[in-house]
Image (cartoon, helix red, strand yellow):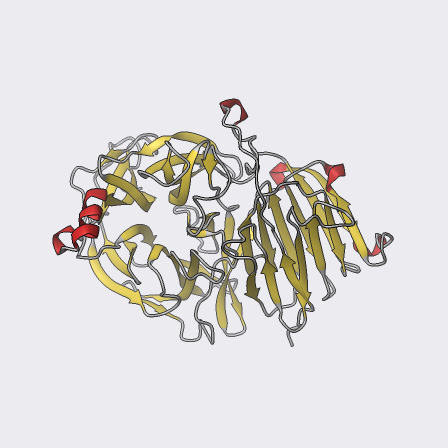
Length: 517
């Protein structure tokens, strides 16, 4: 019988007023609140990750970007590259808007066999599929609601003949025209080795529409998926791909982001597991059980995440990254030179729990940036206040670190604070624990106006926990990513102590993480 969990994990992140961030270019990546091991743009606004592919040892990441301001504006595709998914090299902006035409979200693939005919004979062409959003049509549609203006969004291609360095807009765009839907966007292209075809998953209103192609230029409508999961909001940013579990059983996975109505408010991403027969995606009959929806992340700050293309042929994993923010407040957070960061990249794997398939989202290995390691067996450290153990961050002098522990007991609490004996309520604190009856993970956030407490339910005994704390974010991975919560926060005074209690003979490892910049 699955053990029950004894205490509730509570994380209270209290927001208070914040100081103005310096805009001096000499302080890039050193500003207050700037993440030190998560990707963030050098300046300007960022949201959805786009166009992710792997080629010649490089992970390419594009993202929605407005370089002229730190709020949403005319969308560009910005570009960054990494060899290890930890250190990033910023590249020139890849795709620019053209007049009223904004470059919305999408995906990119490596056309190895030049099926599109867009290669130059020297390198395989890289094709970026994106939504062209016509702001003129949007304004006219909003004013008149006339059908002739409803075709706001169409699907376009830009291609690269030099391995992603420069991009050319296809002269015969759009490759998929709008069938009459105001919301019609975010094409995610996937190659199926089984069916020897390319498939597009495209979001429209409350459904995902599937298309297929053999040459990446001509696309045929094949089916739609709708009617399950959370539907109170516009669906966005789909992803469709196969995975195999440890026994070699293959299933298909569909990600669906929704711009509101996530478990803790605002935007979030749900997923479905089932089968895809080359035409239709069919969810496993018992996948949802008595739940309305299953979510990638139960915190407030992981949206529009998708996976890298061209990374693995063995189907045992996919690499994932998400936008670490929320549309409810993303443009209001107290940073001035830049806004937003990405989550830590994650490995997506397929597991079977009882009679249901589920996904695990485990963080990538951060060993490359671990500068100092502290390892303690808690049973030998219970000399402070009976069953209480502390890590003094003032002695470590860091804003970014990782904590891992293996837990053999069922009563656990962890508290981050800016004071040892008294909690200053003008700052924030986090407390974590497990409750035998509720079996929940709870987080409080900086956003008093939006959400003070978030909750996620889980059924298994907590045997391991990983906590990633960066300058303005926290990510918690329960049981190697069986449940994840991600949140951003903004402080007035930094943490200087972490307190543990109820760990008994558990093993704690905590590492200082160096800046990737």
